[in-house]
Length: 247
Image (tube, rainbow, N blue to C red; front, side, top):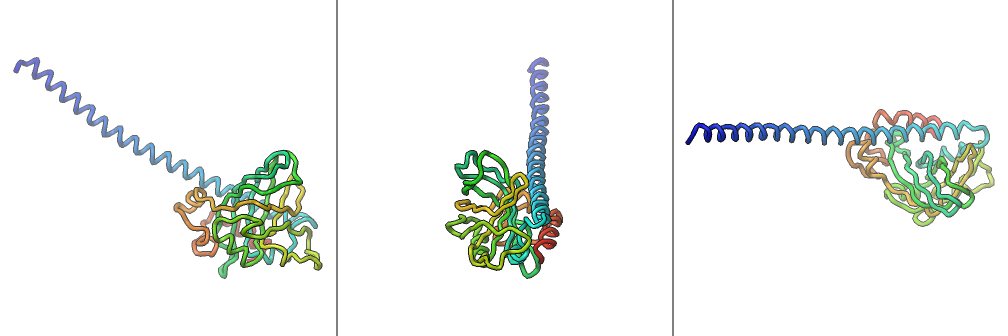
């Protein structure tokens, strides 16, 4: 074999070795980037969940602090579960239909459960004209309503009876709010707070938000029955529930 041939053979091996090393490094870089992007996306998603908890707490605080126009104390103190949907988007021109993401907790023997994340779709908003956002509060008032919520998917008006909740500092003694519905609902739009029926709305556990917040998939029932510890980021949500609805 000529020296030139040897040189060409040596150069070929060198190039092959160089590309081989670069290939290994590139593979490691790609894996690192994938992990980084996944972690960043998860952190961003969890950040949205924390923001929703803070917004939900703010909605409860502002509504209950409004003089003579909040949820009656007797009603919220008897609620089995409380759910809030900050800035639910409604369909335009009163055609019915909406979408929103919310957070819910239920009473347990140890206090309020960890937050459970859900989405809501549909529902009639006949008295609203034009596309706009509203804060929605849902109070699950009895064991039957709570059972529907624990199922992680149910339809208001079909699986669970729903009605507009009474408004005021105290519920009128003549009202039958304890017997009217499994779920009482309220809406606040442009500072106006009123009872509203979300008949036809479908409540579903938001699995992606659940994974982002807890780091794994946790069933709705497990969360709302108090069988999972509540992360520190939910403190403001729990503190607000305890202040305005008791333990």
